[in-house]
Image 1 (cartoon, rainbow, N blue to C red):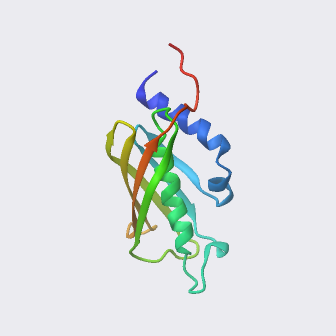
Image 2 (image 1 turned 180 degrees about the vertical axis):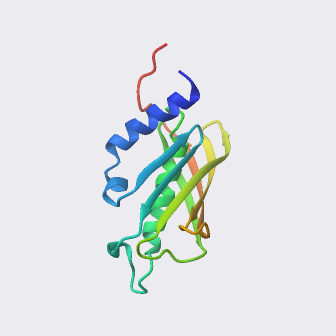
Length: 143
């Protein structure tokens, strides 16, 4: 199995059980070893009291992209710590896209940087996720 096939199969297994990302209207747009791209269109129910996308939904989009990126090796991996900086608002009707890229992976620990952009390409948020690999796999690999 190639690394790309492993990433795709891991993503498919995770996506099958990811009710939260689906409920929020996200799509998994791309997957590769150590990286993932996800997006969603900001709807009325994503808006806060300022009529802009609630930061919690932007965080969730970035966190989901982080999850798919760090789980792309068929190793169960969870978030250890996350941090986000909001740079510009998401607007109703706009597609937000989160691109996760692996910065470092050593042993059971990983560092992932996620950039959330708006439809015009501007940066909406930057997110850093620290991961920890735990026991288990998403699927049993043939030997």
